[in-house]
Amino acid sequence: MRSLRVTIGTGGRYTLSAIPTVSIRRVATPHVAQPLQLHVLGSVELRGTASSVELLSQPKRLAVLVYVALAQPHGFHRRDTVAALFWPEQSDFHARAALRKALHGIRQSLGEGVLLTRGDEEVAVDREQLWCDAHAFDLAIVNEQFARALELYRGELLDGFFPDAPGFERWLATERPRYRESAGHAAWALAERYESGSDLTLATRWARKAAKFAGADERRIRRVLSLLDRAGDRAGAMRVYEEFAEYLRTELDVEPSAETQTLVKAMRGVRP
Image (cartoon, rainbow, N blue to C red; front, side, top):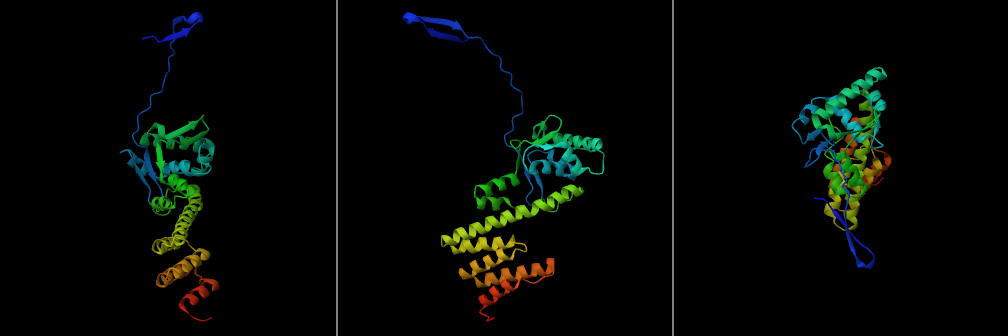
């Protein structure tokens, strides 16, 4: 059926004329009810298609996908940079060929639309096709949705994942502390929020959580100890201190600083 245009002319006369039709061509894309899910905080998981299991059995290709998805700045990454990171021992030509093969394998496992390309030089992950818990975690931190962020943080980034790619492993070694520190920041922010609202039960819960992420950060530990002490949980504070001291001895072969020990002695009622 053809569309008609109604024009009002002089004297209130109506004129009917046909409107030319325009053909709009849409590129057919498969309907995706839900995006694929890539979980990397904790042990790695891929959810969404049966064929994704194949990718889990190919650590290097999975590492390529994770790097393209998470490496900063987010978005498109140059192929030569990715190829050099994963195949540094090969020539540029052979490294790019290995990358092309890896990207082809990722598309075969997860679908053509999961990767975006810009010419022959850049590649990215389509976030509408692939949801990632690390992206959601970062967004929750930015929006100060700290409880949601900690719900997403199941553990260390790619815990127990070894792809036999030294360049990727060096990158991973710099990213893991960033996520852990963000989780610690989120837990401490919740502890302070609930303490200011006089909900000491939740304040102490989140303070103990913050201590788990503190690593060797004695300043954070002292703040946790002080909050627990103010909340009347001195026994909990001592447990946090002993766990922290054991961590320092085991991992770094050092003792807590004099400042931390002085704080603990004051809590115990021991005079200097």
